[in-house]
Length: 270
Image 1 (cartoon, rainbow, N blue to C red):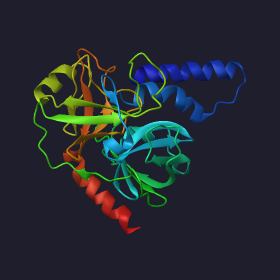
Image 2: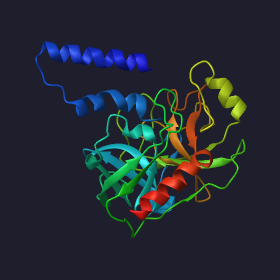
Image 3: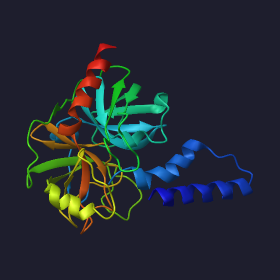
Image 4: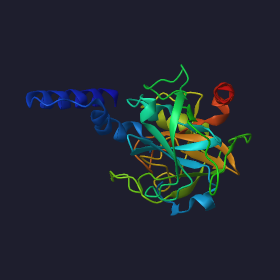
């Protein structure tokens, strides 16, 4: 995948160079990263932010919807580290809270900062987690926080993933309305065996989904996987969406919890 992206970037640069056009790096990112770095709701149903619990936020860069995120406190949002790849200018990030449809205004707040672990690797998405601090607190109607997961992620445990992502793996545009789907945790053995030939799965990851039927999809990246008001996973990546062979891969909140708690502590002191 990385080689394919590099080839695509090179072709884009050559074509524009021949036309003597100036290349906007942010525009290039929009072309390259959405299909590969936004991770992979399919097989689910429409819902509202009120019914969901008010914890999901939409993250925008230069006003473009990029990823989902989860409110852990009035000024703290948890999301995926890969959402910030190629989008490092913190002043261009904004969060929308308390919305069901992306067309709603809700509460829109700029970011002050975001912190990604030094152990995050783009090559295999190890430690795909990031915390963002909002410029001001968000609170009010349809806005709630989640606590971190304290439940063991046993195979078969059903969790809920939600977002504004694709509902068709062949599509290209995100949804306007919020959707959710319930997916079971898959055994680590099955997860490792499925991805062994293609991706290096690390201890920071686990798999969930109903093969060929239920999954997260593009533009759901960074969003929450929830069990009884506990944030247990972060949408990270997968091969296609609702694939008959490959389940969705999520960042294990239990594994990355030390990073989350330490970073939150630091951010909330500022």
